[in-house]
Length: 422
Image (cartoon, rainbow, N blue to C red; front, side):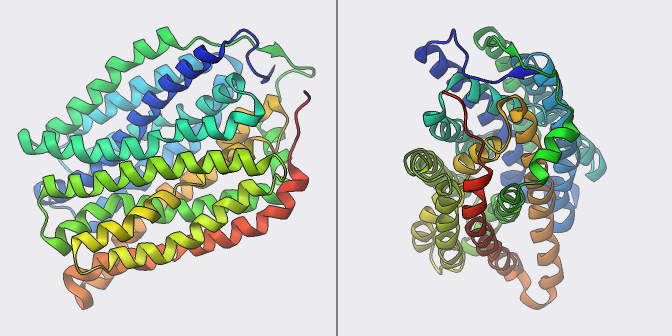
């Protein structure tokens, strides 16, 4: 195994370049996930799918292998080259995204989405570990938040580009064009991002069971992981289904929906995810519990504002109410991913990140869109076209669960945090 201290030969300028390239790749990661959400209405009509089937395509089809393969791929990255693993992952998930454009029915599309999940499993945890190598402890939550801007930017681009290409050609072309663009980016990423030198740690490679055993003994790990999972269940469900809700509630076409929702994701999401890193770095210096506390407060405010926005009678009111929760619901990403990696010694961090992501993604991605779609199918006989909107309101309550779990994590996090030597 290696000692994951900051890369000793990197300059601040090169560290920022590495972060920018990781952000580009992470943007494609989320773009390829979100494109299915904006195209859901036309895919549903073309392939004759139910809301439950669409939810499965956005959830368990992606999450099943994405979550389970993240840990072994993180171990491969720790043992070999993180930049090569990320490059290979980008090629695989982009290739399967392009193949989605050739699907002839539910099961073909389901299998191609499994492939997207396989590829994306190798992208995030190695990127987290690279960031921790290139940036000092006092700037890591901020760097992690800048990297995590790939979430709102990718979501917004998926909405905007997916709708634009689908309108100009069709939904199949949207998958093909966006998938091939990711394949083109892969060799550029590999040429720019060099693998930093790593110093062998005493005792050799730590097996995954040792990393998980270390985490399992710490209450803060479970509280942070399940808080993130509760938030992600609501977040993934909303990200997938809100475009369909907007079309049903306000009579938008695909283009109007993409601009309405894309602007919310871009303005709110980028602000919130960066703010989370800044607050965690600033407050966390004096109190490590602040990494959990800022997330708890954000989720507490998120829930009622999402309800107000989803139930607004006019699109203008909806946009104004939804702007703030679209910032706050994602604020946790930088603080909690940073905190999870500081629960173990430096040499275990990529695997620790993968363990954290396993819980977060298996529950959040696997359940979010499928659960909301399934609830709406059950509620449809009673509520008709409004069933999807009422189902979304019910799912928002999970943000309150996340807030409570994060609040409980504040005290144990102070005790469980592993400080680094100067």
